[in-house]
Length: 388
Ligand code: PLP
Image (cartoon, rainbow, N blue to C red):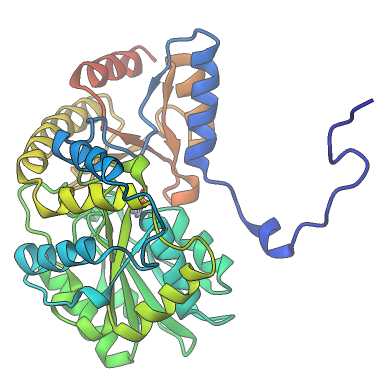
């Protein structure tokens, strides 16, 4: 007789892992998928990925890499060609000068962030994170032994970061500041004066900044300002191929910053996953070397969709500030239910639209909708919400 492993004995799970909270985005996406499998026509506005195909020249580079037998282990920190392409991109697009050795390539920006927090934090070190925030930051910080400290930003200010609020949150245990512009889930883009003020604050107080610039290219009528321009010694840039080049499944992210930190991150990665997929690295090299056309196409489409969804939601009384970047809106759902978890459930069960509750982002009374989907779908979603 066979029995399911785990029925007579299960290993004790570490306290650390028991504190880890699964992402609510994944929870909603799985429930929506399950409903879809049952034949229910659910429209998902929950996903955090572009709906475009990976550009053809990137796919061709990956195929060429396979055919050329580039299928073996690579340097832990990434192939020199990719790190050179990243250094050239930083020079060309951001006016930043880094050597390819200051670049480390991970399995997605997620791994690069994970490595960074493990390399930088000791138990009890505090990390300031402007909120609403991407849910993985506080979880990763806690997992690395640190203490996440939320610094609120408000919808009525368009989620503008108040640098004085950041300063007021500093304690003797503060070690890091996380910046995420354009931001997930707010879509807020920090203007250059804010970024410069954060850089000055970090320099003045001896703090270090982890600057997640993953949505750099998805930005409307604004310029992206990297904090590394003002405080390169105090900054680790996180970026990657997922959002800019529609490459979420290829799992390529990278970090760029001071050499001792990059070496420490390489050491962590060398004892865990080693290099990111060799084929994906060749694909990302082609993507980062030149994808201007694709980026312009994607930006134009995202902007049209943003304009439509923002106007539609505001007209329904599900108010949302107009985001300047990324592909998310945070809509006020208190008209549907005061509690955003309940509102999410009602929207899924009755309107058959999957959204993500703001709870874990620290956005009470709000839900996140991703508009990385067709205009037709956005129209259908607005119609269903209107009926609801
Ligand atoms: N940073 C932010 C703000 C994100 O929203 C995401 C993905 O959703 C990531 C980083 C990680 O992306 P990836 O691991 O696909 O590179």
